[in-house]
Image 1 (cartoon, rainbow, N blue to C red):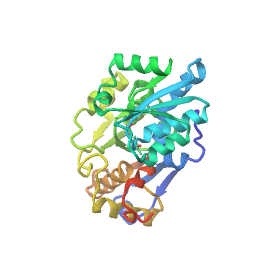
Image 2: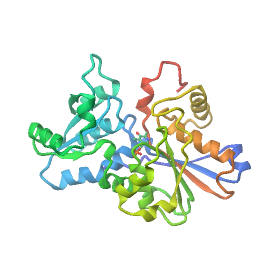
Image 3: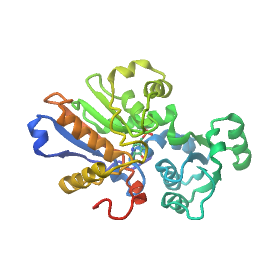
Image 4: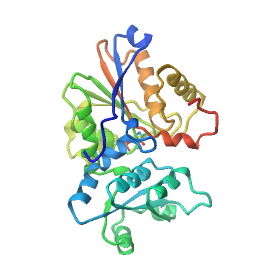
Length: 301
Ligand SMILES: *Cc1c(COP(=O)(O)O)cnc(C)c1O
């Protein structure tokens, strides 16, 4: 691995609910890799970084919005590996840059702002060619690492999870991380995917695109009812849950991804979704910098 995994622990949680339902619950702390940079994002970057290391291509170009965990992770990973990074940002340049974008700049990323219309068309070959003309030859990473190489990088997360684990739960954005988990899971393991976007109905299609293999779908279970109104939306119930989870277990979660995922897992345990004897692992994918966009005082941690 090009990233430091020694601080990642798989922490077992203790509480009465788990005991009464006879299940065990662990949290795989990918958030421990770095205070700002999301754990799963660094895994998704692994094979792109390796390509840059092994070839003469020393510039990485990628895409994201003003609050993108992927952009900041790319900026950080490039800095760590002495690579140049370019971030193409959705929308016109604002007067005040978001905390995320300021962080990208502090890691040495060069930013280029483009209109939302142009951004929507970014997969277009002509657009990529224009970017390469402007910035020179570079390794282009799709938004969110949404690519087979991104999924293969995420598959490395499974090396940190014991074979005896029966259920692995993960928040879903582009589906790249879950695709990677499926690629490297054992036949006895179910991957429980919790989308944080409303009405995501193309998860299977995305997994086929990312892995090129339909057989992985048999181990996938999707829980579509925990998006709390949509991407980056939240409510008091979610914030109260995150606060009490922190008080009980001293684990901070983010309201965009991991807060919703852990909420879902507790709700599913309450509803007897996991059979007695289940060994559940929740993947803490990090993303804590996202909480900086909440009004002061929303969270107690
Ligand atoms: C990006 C992100 C995810 C979602 O990962 P995908 O591979 O895009 O599905 C989950 N959690 C956090 C904290 C993230 O930043």
